[in-house]
Length: 353
Image (cartoon, rainbow, N blue to C red; front, side, top):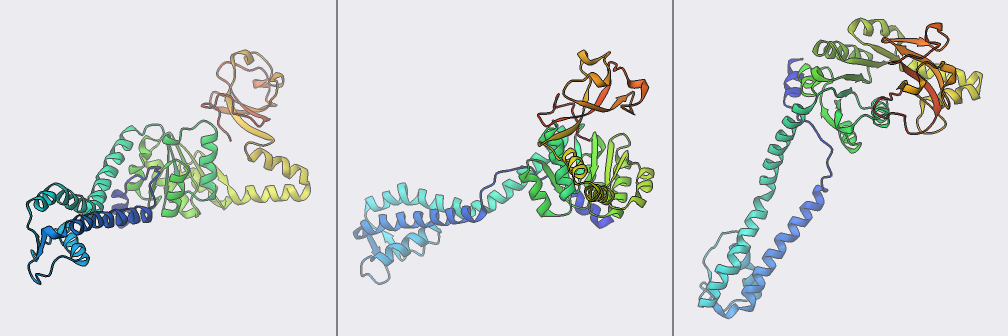
């Protein structure tokens, strides 16, 4: 555990970027270096009578010009070929020297860029951590994690207020491609979760691929943040009580949910298709949670046009639509509704369940 914690402490946030392909950049720099050498060689070749070969004393050939250009731009300078005319020396000062400097900048540019990028990443990491408040942390970016993030974004969450933690670099790259920040490392590492600003998060979603990892991640996240709304996905229903004891506010049993959907589809294909439609977004029916509008206060749950109310959240408690206590809507009520697929009403307050 100590080793994982140490690795997590050094992790930097990976933010969405549009970096150029490194091989394309390498080819571009190589071609630019060849152009510099070619221009320098051409200058010497066209003015070859102004240069002297101090070794063979047989004039300057094209090969000599390329050789002179190469050793000049690399600052080797053996001195076997030298400019003897005044104008040749002036051209070396005004043209060849800037080309030599450009070549050196190009030569060490990769090292400088690596150092600069590391410094820039550290700066961006610190700035990102300072501004992270009331955000959402998603631990695990597999199929469930990607679906959870997509649902959050569709229902009004801002991409720059979501951060993913996953042990796979490929998953982190995928999260960046989807427009959210990510950290690579162990989802149970206390130091890594601190770097994801879990203590300041408003929502924590755990969708790792093992139940034992989910339990440990839940315990760690809850210790770091006693107040965040914490939802966990597990595969085995027998682990649900343990997760609730560990501090989870909501537990979704993925295998049971899939099994129930398969069973419903076997009993009635139409019933299974309807439930699947409710779980999918953007086609057919959507299920969402929203604030009761002022013109709906005092009305019955049956009088909401274009939507069907399944439940009412009042005073932090969910009451089913048949509960007499919520037959008439009040100010502050939140409605769980089914409606035709469309842009969620009140995108910032609507939350798909």
